[in-house]
Image (cartoon, rainbow, N blue to C red; front, side, top):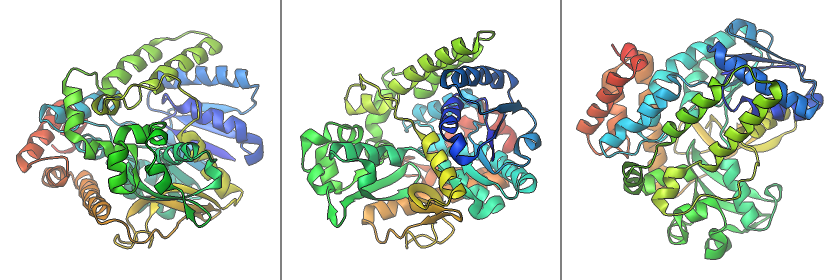
Length: 446
């Protein structure tokens, strides 16, 4: 088996490679190809992987290349996590809306839409090349905004593309721990879009254990979403939202925290990763150790803006439980070995959420096997969640059309219709602010 990683110089690639090392023999994985347009970043990550392989006594070979066709030819699976505009672009994504008093976040609100506007054309081209060079390959998408991008590239790849996010699995894992159970012991009734989902039930057979958890403030205080949203709001919803819904439910609080002088997530990552990638010529072991230290600092400060807005402290004891790399390899294992396991994934709705059309990409539990991801029927959902999902799905589709037709009019319309943007004039100023500061966007919409 061959797996190609597009965005092979990305910081989180060692996590993916580590998960591959653990499963290589079981999967018959013999070849990993890393593709990136940045040779310097690719070389730095290659050194880290050499150190990781030495640490694990692993024998899984990998190769690096700046030629896309070389990377994907003969691939059975293609993983993709790219960042068009790099972290410098993310800084702008997050900063421009804040100047207008609007949430600035990588995937939520205007920041996510701007990221999508410059990412969708590149991703569609990549998907087309993969379809031509490796038509049998399954495409596993990590590129953000993951649900929107997955929907955009279905035009080239159809059902052979699956979108991955570790947020739902992380929520389910934390809820299970709060209930004193293992995640494999429970059925999680989860529904929504990427970074816009809710956990409605946690079932042990026919019994739903979630109401008991929601009534217990002490247990709610023991995990991330319980502290973020608070027991009072969670009981009002009768559900536990994905952590990214904090930016909707507590938008002004987030803006206030970020405008008080708090360093944005993008600014932190840019400074941190610039220092990491600037270190060259060190031994593989030293490179791996530097990566580990950088990663720990990165994870310990995750969601700092939401924590500040909610008035809660950062976690002192960070635990390395993994993330999307485990979800991605679980998809590979389920398809390659026909394991028919249940995962929460981004895939075509079919009839899972009856108020959306069949082609809308949703984030719901799926049965994954040799035929890919088959979404499970979720049924009717609470009215406020349905309204928000329908609105954001329309915004996503306007954004995709704007990106592919290079229409400023549609881009502004998408921004103006987003619930976090208060007026059409603000939407226009945000778009023009992005276009004036981001060369990729300016060129696309010239």
